[in-house]
Amino acid sequence: MAPLTSRDDLVIAGRRFRSRLMTGTGKYPSLEAMQASLEASGCEIVTVAVRRVQSGAPGHGGLMEAIDWGRIWMLPNTAGCATAEEAVRVARLGRELARLAGQEDNNFVKLEVIPDSRHLLPDPFGTLEAAEQLVKEGFAVLPYINADPLLAKRLEEAGCATVMPLGSPIGSGQGIRNAANIGLIIENARVPVVVDAGLGVPSEAAQAMEMGADALLINSAIALAGDPPAMARAMALATEAGRTALLAGRLPQRAEARASSPIEGRVTNH
Image (cartoon, rainbow, N blue to C red; front, side, top):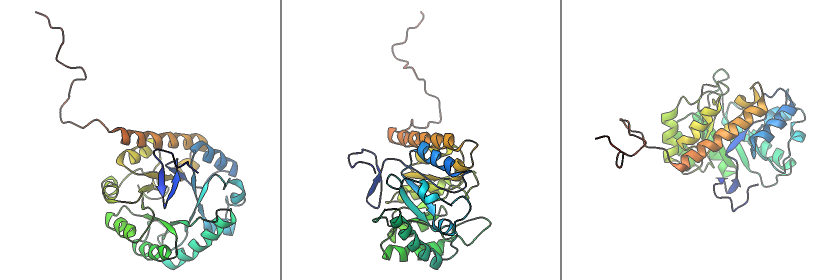
């Protein structure tokens, strides 16, 4: 994990990470492609669908053995859960999965409550209900939500470690369709804001970071690319570029042009 001396660490629930790009483990053409992509991305947090691992779903056989859990922090997720009750139960299983991987102190969970199998939009009521219960049980909850500033604040007040608004629907590659609301969430949040879902190309990753997002979670855009490791590297560079640009401070936008060279001191013809 990242050293405590790092100057611009991502901090979630007191744990420090150098990389601000999180990735996933699903949809890759092979375990080898996934391994190469994780390496190319430089990520330190990887989300794992607890239900799919436990059921041995296609593409998830051998997953636990394919990742170096001494270097990668597991983020178990409750994908496939349609109710708060289901999500809480799967989160508990996820904590045990992390412990089996040797991460005894890992209480992280990516909370997903998605009853809508067509559009895959998260249920705000079920998400809040599950988050409140999981926080009581000592989890560091990273909830996946619509870009709803009021819900984001409620989840923060409930004790969530982050909020994770979607840029656009899961796997859609539509980019950031909710920029105004995500901007409000970033402006008001006192916990890290992780833009999750819908990003398709590196320019969109850079855009999210330039807006002030603290981190990104990108899976489909990498796993379903023609060359997943190359796209993983591109997303990592874009994440870093966007963060650096935010910290550098952009040129103010103006209604009129302004010359790059100063007018004073120019040689004039008489």
